[in-house]
Image (cartoon, rainbow, N blue to C red; front, side, top):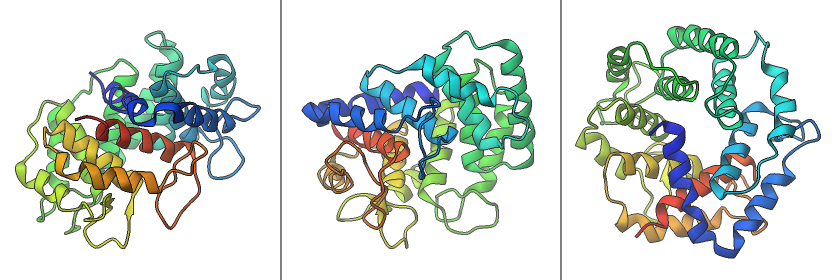
Length: 284
């Protein structure tokens, strides 16, 4: 199983929790597709990053995806040499949905060269997660898995978490979740210390903080933490009820999810994270 497949499998279980509201989520996602075939971001313009989340969210719902329309948008990036590392990985993910195992070889090579270049220059926990996902999406094997594990070792913090920059003493939940995911898919053991650190970042009211001293819990941290804990084989039954209540506070009733109680703007990214969290939390 790949990172993408694992996320999809977990998020697809959200329909159990959503029930009749599943159609509302699909309608919200369709409303985010622009005339050019891309999904809008935080503005009305199409954005490749949000297009990736829009495709993923529709896929997990089992909703029809207008692939031909989306392909029209994606072609704008096939020969774009200015794309940064994150957007190259987003393109790889989008193509893995649109073309399955039949992505053009020259395009695969082009994306791989770009991913390799940026990955070599900036190895963060998030970067390791994106790079491994991109390799998997393109049907490639990572050339130096031990080097990736060694990189993550240098990003582990004294408190048991992980960070995206060396020399930082306190971990962050998104970075730790990314590190756990990478270790899992490389067949490496996740330490009990890291699992316990992550569990301690859950608010008593539900939801996970981005770091222990963050002022409010947020949906990205919550969804990625729960997913990472599942990959690590950690039980979350005692967190289930309060986390469900937290996710419910970020649902706008029209089909979208927002990031936190202080940011009520719904978008494709946080709607996917809402589905991912609900998928795990719907399991008994």
